[in-house]
Length: 446
Image (tube, rainbow, N blue to C red; front, side, top):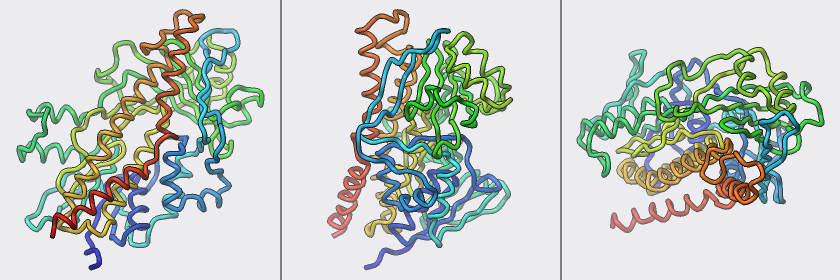
C-alpha cells in the first residue's frame, strides 16, 4: 500500500530547514511548505567547514554535482592537516603547538554558497513563504495543527518542524504546550524548570566575525598553512582559514569574559563593532595576528554566542525541532551547521519511510528524538570543552608554564580526542537504527 501523503510545514528557511526539504524531496513525495520570517531566504554568518561525517550526508543528497558545478573540491581520503594551533600571545613569532590530523580533509565553504546549493536541490513540491513569523500553533481535534503567524494569517499542516534558530518560536510553543498539558519529563517536574531549560545560555564569550580579502594577507602568512589555524592565548583566541577556493579568509576573534558564562548579556546579541574593538584585546600578540587584524574592514560583526545545552525534547506529538532550535552550540568544532544537516537528514528519512503515516507520525518523531537529542547535546558539550582548551582554560593545561611538556601533551590529546567524531563516526548508522525501529511498526500493528 502506498504511503498516504501528509503535509509538512518547516518553520525557518536556513541550512537545517532547506536540508529537510531536500531530504523529503529525495526520499519521499511529501508536500512541504517552508515559512521564513525574513523577507527573503538568506543566512547570517560567513564561512564554515564541512567534515567527512557531514559530507557523507551531503553526498547522499546530491551535493557532489552542485559542488563540481561551482568548482569546489570534495573530501578526499588521505592524511590531512585539519587544524593548526599556534601559541600567539607574545610579540615574537608564534609557535606551532598542536596539529589535528584526519584521514580526510575538511571542506571550507561560504554559507551563502551552501544556501545556493540547497536551493538548487529543492523539490518541486516545496513552497517557500517569506515574511511569515510563527507565533504559536494549536492542535486540532482531527490531529492536524494550525499555525499562527504574526501578520494574522494561519495555515494548517500535519507535521510542524521548527528549524527557526536559537530564538525558536516552535521550541517555545512546545514548551508552553508541555506545561499546559501537564506533560513534564523526568527531572523537569516543575514548569519553571522546563521553561528555564529552553532558554538560551550565554557562553561568556564575545566573538567578532568578518571576511578578509586574500590579497590583503601575504602569501607567507601562517593562515595558508592549514585547513583551519587557531591563534591561541590565555582567555582569547582567533580562528582564520580560507573559504570557497580562497575567495575569502574567514576570520573569528574570541575573548572570554571571566565569570560571564550563564549570566545575561547586557546588550544586543549581534551588532556591528568598529575595527578598534576587535584589535584591542590582542595587543602585543604575534605579527601574524596583527596582520590579520589590520586587514579587517572598518567594522566587524560582534556576536555573543549563546547555546542550548539541555533542551529536554526534540519532538512532541506531531511537532519536532532541529538545528540551533534544539542544540545551538559554539563554533569550536565546526559542528553547528553539520549537526543541523544531520538532524534534517535523519528526520527527512524517517518522515519519508513507508511506515510513517498520518497515524504513526508521533511514534516516528519519537524515534528521531531518541536518536538525535542525546547525540547532538554531547556535541554541544564537546564543543564547549574544546573552546576552553583553545584558550588554556581547561583542566589539561592552563598555559602558565610554556615549557610544561607533560601538560602540553595532555592538552594536545584532549583537543584531538574532541575532534575525532567528525571523521570516525558515520551518520548513516543513525538512519539504520531508525529504519530498524520503523520496521517494527509493521509487527506491532499486526
